[in-house]
Length: 114
Image (cartoon, rainbow, N blue to C red; front, side):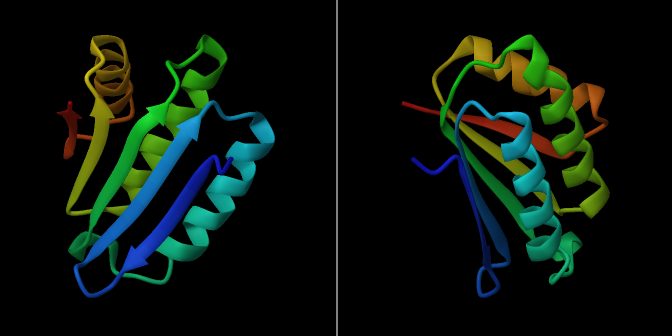
């Protein structure tokens, strides 16, 4: 099963990202390289980053620093808006909001779907 995907939709000015399961350190490394290549090809402040977290696992303590670094990376890219779509889960919602706050990601929004 794929752990992530990143697709740039230039027509709708969106970057569609999907993260699934749990990441190992080597997954993080591949993800960061892929992200930098794809996002480096666009003017991010004109785009929305839409992250589908509906199949993401609850974060373990050792994954928090990696996710925080990813959030900092999203922030540095300068997206107009960052959306995190999750299934209704108070724990994941709280984790994502806390990590966004710690990473200084002020334009992030967690959207819960049924």
